[in-house]
Figure 1 (tube, helix red, strand yellow):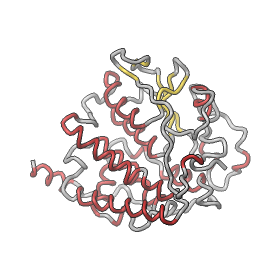
Figure 2: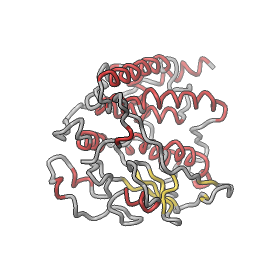
Figure 3: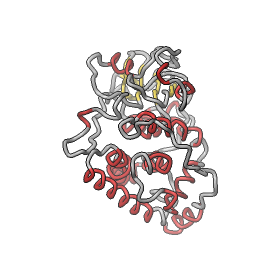
Figure 4: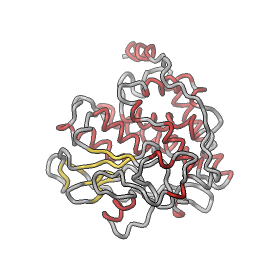
Length: 334
């Protein structure tokens, strides 16, 4: 079984320390880099289970780049060879997981069987953990970028010529400094903090991360009592950054990662905000609770050695979110 993280990502004190992204080349629309923005040239490899990859899926969807940038979804079950290009039905609970060696590739670009092949094609000496997302260049036949913090801004601006929704801007200039500060806060205290709690191997490390996580959620709950989104009535990158953690919280992080002081449904504003974003046109189709649960519970054998995937919880993501009143409140404050 592949470990959830590389040995180098675990400190002596039991803290999870995430590895750096390996490929950080930039696509440009002004000729400033070797990778020009172009329709049909780039392909996005993602997992519906991964919050980091999910943010790039959302940006691709909301900017209207589906016809410009192809996308392939890996199987949610990550075996000892890593993320695989196979029919996800083959790894459903109860299937013959030990008979997955022979399967037809679902990679339409390279006919690879594993995402690791894109990494070694880019760097034959690559030895770190293979991660999603990965943005592949079909012309040079290598990964341009595997960092969602780069890919999302590129989708937002660099590919705007090809976007169906050109007027949408998730990185508005007038709040750039405050937005960047909040995004950093969310990454450290929410997005990555659930992993630091879940992958901790010492009690003190776990408790410290868990407390910081819920302190942050308490703070965001207060912020959302005054406005519909994190910055008034407009959705920005930070909203989707937070959403990708919130949508996984009650289904996985609460139990699997022991982030169980409270559920998101126990926070009135956070829960309504989560439903509001989920019900935004196009977002529901980017979410698969099935893939999310299968990946975490079946892949992290050191946390869940039986690989049993729980039936629950029952999540009603379509009920009324009640956030319209927050929009009126934010408008009145202007």
